Image 1 (tube, rainbow, N blue to C red):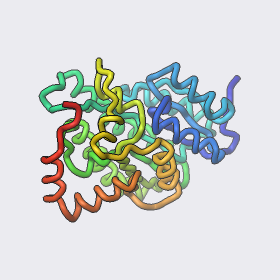
Image 2: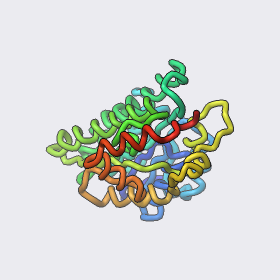
Image 3: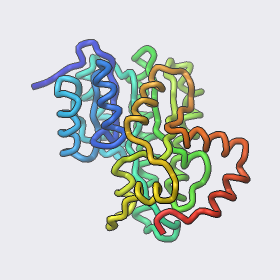
Image 4: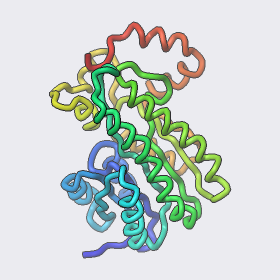
Length: 269
């Protein structure tokens, strides 16, 4: 059975099979939006559609590294959404924890390809649809690791700095075209990425972080901030009290942040 937006606002979400993407999809669906669920995890997409209700969205298998797949997926979604794309939520991302020299070339290429190139591909492919939708908004998920270089997350941190920089530039570039941009920067969130960041390991980074006195926030907190970003006009949004503290410290007390990071045991070592 083919569903359609039926005049509803439309959002396309990458990484929608789990974590922040799924939580955001639930929030948008609850608010009456039509949701495009995109992910490389086909089984996870089916579960996500069931979670938001089959009448509230559509599945679009997508590897964000594939430019041509982006074009096809958005065109298919637009057919269901009456040609509109009110929000693109560039959420898909991967992480690898551990010292810089512990990662192999494939890990580093994956981080760059998914976290940076995937976001760029999405913004480029979605722009024509967003330009045709009054009030459209591009929302990119960065991280607090994009505020200050994070030991044990060096390459991941670099990719999130890139997402932040891209968002800040596109916010200016897209404005004359009627498209606004938001960059959401979460602290550590309770998602599968905290386990997937250690391939071949049973290490639970959420437990490690909490054991070190660091908070880990629920996905619902991130979904709430994303929803606020959709309706707001600001560029930067932060998830969690610790994220807001990190923003202040990195801007006003960078020396103290550096000293604190040097005194802390590196992640996953």
